[in-house]
Length: 214
Image 1 (spheres, rainbow, N blue to C red):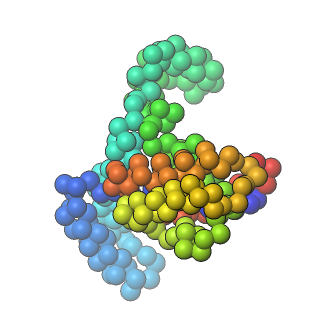
Image 2: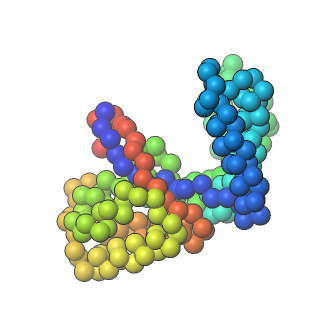
């Protein structure tokens, strides 16, 4: 197994839900404080309340898919044929009726047509995450390298995008082995600017993958 560093988007609270999130977070902290002084962790009532609060918190978060207005799978021109083909390949025991399958999966967002998708996703393959390995291999500027290790706000992302664009134009980087430097740096700059424009931050995360993965 080898470790890769990638950027993940920092969850963004819906603008109209900020006050509610503060109240939920305060109650969660209060319960956690009570539990910390009790043996055995939260009791059944406390755990039920924590689950309710976390569910409410989830509803306050704006998903990257919604923020990016990425299209639904059902909007693909040949979606019904595509869904039928996928449905036919499913094990009979696991398959839903075709109509239910088409409706269910058709409501998912189409990452391949999302404007915020990275061409260089992390180990997870999620396209709204970005592999930082090539950037660290290419860039020797310590200020830029340091920023990779911290959570960045939208404003900090825009500033970093500007620095990377200048570094790119000045050809002040080492050419990596596995990616085209022009394509990669263009993608990083675009990724930073797109998601900063949608109000998201980024944070570094470690991911593990099999050593045989390129």
